[in-house]
Length: 285
Image (cartoon, rainbow, N blue to C red; front, side):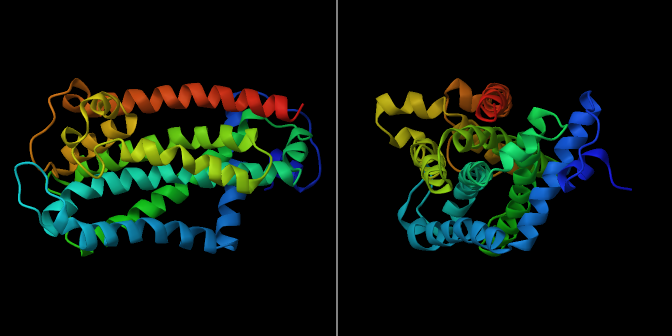
């Protein structure tokens, strides 16, 4: 049976519905719309998978033998254990650019105005979009984990802790998708959204413990890297996967990485979801 919001998206406009349940329902309807679009344009998923897979292969086979982790000998097999938590985290955060471009495209095509005319919660459009992006990110992580296992990466702390690590990654990815939503609402074209969604991610991911130990960085940069939310999630995943290679940094965020990762993700989600919904209301006003 077709629901009220689905009727509205199809063209008929029913009476206004209110309440948390209605907002959640509206969000899921919008999420399904975006998921259907991904299945109808499989290139979005395919090209989204190619980049992280290429990173895994290039870093492990081309650079792995040249990068030495303190307390170990330089080798591709050792480096892949150190690397994968960083690649996983990079993958979920780089999905931000896709969220930015998707929302910017909806803006330029007038879909925001269409949604505004419907009797649905203002936040549902953005929540639905971020949920759809979360589903795509989860699928990408599954494929990437299979590739990592094929090139020698292993989980050493059991399946429950590994699932906890993937949950942290998805939480970080969901938090960053709200940053992407704000960027998409703030620019005038999908091309600008893609560039704006990526340019700040490169320093965020490279000034971290994702690819090299923080101890190898200049002293003034180490403090930034230790308190980087990206670093906390990477360290938490290494701990949960059992992939810690070399000594653990003594900095407080690294010693309590799981807690810091969760707190950062929740704070980012709270702040940027509020800013995004506020921006959406003004953009469609």
